[in-house]
Length: 227
Ligand code: MN
Image (cartoon, rainbow, N blue to C red; front, side, top):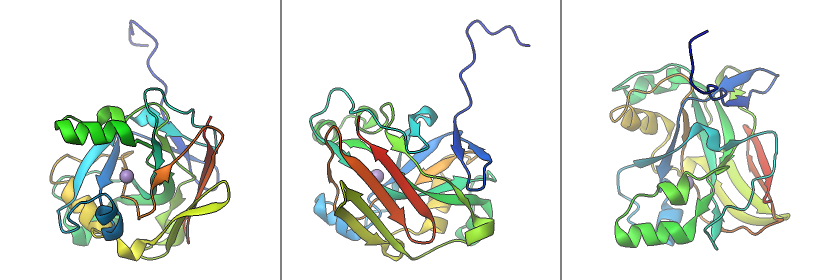
């Protein structure tokens, strides 16, 4: 054993449908990838994709509660398709990008919207609005070997049973192959990376006790109660 001065942190994992585990290396997220959501936040839908990150240990799995985070009065849900990367690479052409994908999941990009609005206004980083503890609930990953690479399908979120977000993967401004191509021009993608691919319109607040349940047709679900 190496002479660690403190206990090394545990490997963060996401369950894979069927019982195995996907080890998480990094979490990348796409901002503004559905035209109607870009418009609802007052942005130009033709902007090229941009990225931010969350730490791997922001993931919440197995339907566990996500505690209401400190320092916000406006926690928002963003329901998203998540891509799990199996093969790394840099400068991956879009035509080869899907060969790098292990599988897909449904996830929530939880956001402290008030802190994000302040950060945007002050031109400060988004980390504390996006990358806080338990900010990335995610459902089981389903292997592309089982379901292929869905490019269309309903993506929905209900809160306490009431519809909140409703869109279709086909409405992504930048589809998955283009996202992988663009991100791999910025960083060397690696096995274990997750990519949250942006949210459709209908984002809104969550309160303590709320049950958020998301579904992507043909892929799966994500469920978490706000603690
Ligand atoms: Mn998002």
